[in-house]
Image (cartoon, rainbow over all chains, first blue to last red):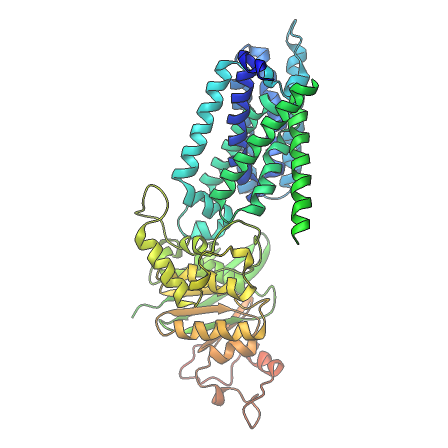
Length: 267
Length: 261
């Protein structure tokens, strides 16, 4: 175990795991309290369209996925704010159409044999230093936005109608939360993959919500719990030579099970 | 003196379904107005129009001579259904602090004055001791008081409440109305409510809304309600509702009243 730490790719994996877990804990909290879990799922899957786009036109995968996910986030924000009617149908559409675009674009790319599985289930052992800078920068932006605009984000999340009566620009902050979620989903794809990302955004958050009395506390605690699960999952994956993304999710689920049993025992 | 709220010939429809037609209403400073009427009659819609959350299809609404969206800091609002979102991890004091209107504020967190003011609002509704409790741990009545404190935080001149006593036990209801009566000495109060007999005990004016509006001055209750029995204890809600919803009001003093159909 210890000698593994001397490999650059293992170090990268660990740093990426921590950065992504912290971001997922903070943003996951906002997604859960704003009841956007399905929306986040839609954005995660739609971002596969961006991966296809990047492969087809030959620009960086992160850039393609980010642009596509942000576009999907803005579209979802627009639909939710202007036409709530059948919003879930449209999110389902964005979800599937984004993936279909990705699959077709990769089909059309000559001679490219992309490993679809690595995007669906993560490839944390293939994190480059450029990826790490991107993850670090995004986490910094998230922390900055959430601390400086905490009041507004809290007001919009708790009671958006009231926030609008207090002069808070609800639409802006709603869109902002969605865009930050989209970007978080994109960096989490590297770690757990776009199918499993929902679990990473919700399991630590569920536990933290029970233990916190403020949104800020919930975000910090979620980040810490997510980090523990991710590191635990990586250790598990390394020890038994299993897929890392799935290992992280199963360790998280096991953690949730233990937590629920302890809660039950307390009552 | 400027009217607190002036609703002038307002009509409103959700898509094709007309909810309010040619509603005219003037609320004086320090009135305690009860807005009553059947479900779907347009009570909450009228309240949302006064708040500027909805825009009238026809007619005008002014709050102290300005559009509602320009008078945000003059209006305190207590929404319906304070029992939703109770899982949200938030402390009582944080909910109250949300009542502050934007403007000058520190880079991070809340200003000292804002915090003092929020505690003052909590004291006013008797919930000071609960400042650090999680909102979900409170009872319905306590939560309602916190929502009133949140509305008081911005020092409004008008307080608008939508069904403030729905799903609160009888004792809690009485306490809420006693609190509103106390607040009425310094501000105008407008309450949408189902609890007809209770609300009319405290209100000085009543507006019955069922697409159209009928307005009543009910300051002198004994003279007004022939529905009171001899001892003045029982009062028949059914007869009274008929009277309040009638197109022509025969009980109110015609010199004081402007009838609105």
